Image (cartoon, rainbow, N blue to C red):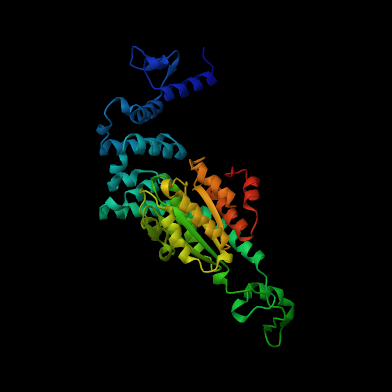
Length: 393
């Protein structure tokens, strides 16, 4: 007799491998599928059917997976699988069954579980979306963006503002440079009851206008391999732009360059302003960004690219070297996402390392700390090592 743990293990293998002779499971006389003493429950059968529709579809014709079937399938997987598994299955369905075209139907968008990968696919279809579909797509995008902002906004603000406050101290500020909150706290003992006011014997400021403490430029490759990185970069740029002490620019590029900086008050507009999926011309983007730099010593330049540049590699390295020579702090990220180790051009990464430009992949949860470390002029190679991040050498 099979014990409970063996039964559970056998059930998992049954759902993984599918039915039939391949895994030794035979149909009983009553039609139940049995493998020894294993019998699938009704919910197991539904799960098996949903898995087979996706992972065994290539044995038949994938074109038969029509809209009504997809709508039911999306509902089934949300019923029988946890959200993390649903997102994986949706992504696999987009890749295996070429379901991008079905995302152009509002009822499909209403049925899916929103996540960064789905958002990336939607943005890649932006140019061909009918107006009615785009309205529904914006709702889906808003749900994902709101979730990202909830997770990322406060850590980013705290890390950046904490670094700026540590980096700049001014005990003799001009009137427009005064940090009134800290000044009031420091002078509470000088409160004058007769006048009902505080005499600020000690004024604390930021050293210069808060709107120009630090310039941050994010230059993002928006070619097809960088889809999710573009999403995160767009969200982070909007958070950074909301900080009064930081001047933020966001530049996205493929073979053309688009400056999204004027849209940073609305992350939805930023993301729909991208044109994901083209080629890339990094030297052209760098040439544009060089014109934006007014104060090299106070500028952090973040290039988010896998560095696959082909014939333009030499010019790309040359322009990045010029930025470093001018005093700009340059950082290269192969990816800004949670997708694991990305592919990148190792030769170009090695060339950047020789210029002293740190190059590595970064997850979204570490990006605020990375920016804080950059503002404090920390050794980013050492910072990456403490975070157990593999850095290009």
